[in-house]
Image 1: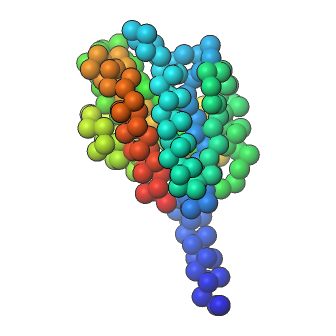
Image 2: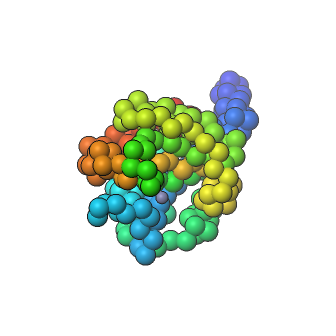
Length: 197
Ligand SMILES: [Zn+2]
């Protein structure tokens, strides 16, 4: 009877110290853009659509693991960046994962990258990036500090922004547009979240 509270106390302490998420930590999934803000659009492929598709797959995988989830949008609607951050800021035990696809005027650019703003988000960024690179088998563009992203600097919790691939690169665009790639991206994000705990 004495051991149990001590262990839970230690776990809570560790969680607080490391800033990692725990088994009951909610995940706010943020499909980037939406509605009038389509994000990048290349040859009819809209970033906002891909973001939502991957986000819904992430949602399903997390729900299957009994992890509490909140989506900042579930359809093709416009949501302000402030509102997205406010959704996460309603909770205390929460992490925030914004899902995007990338574009570059140089169409040879490809790969995945993950942004974080505060050190709290960095371990999750490292973990997601590692899983994505191994599952998607594309170029590793590594983790980066993205202090100018409003959703990262307006959220109080550990927060990351994942760029799942470049729709400006012809080969990567057709992959990104496929359900198989989107499923792998979702699996990478989820196992990255789970491993960071
Ligand atoms: Zn975007």
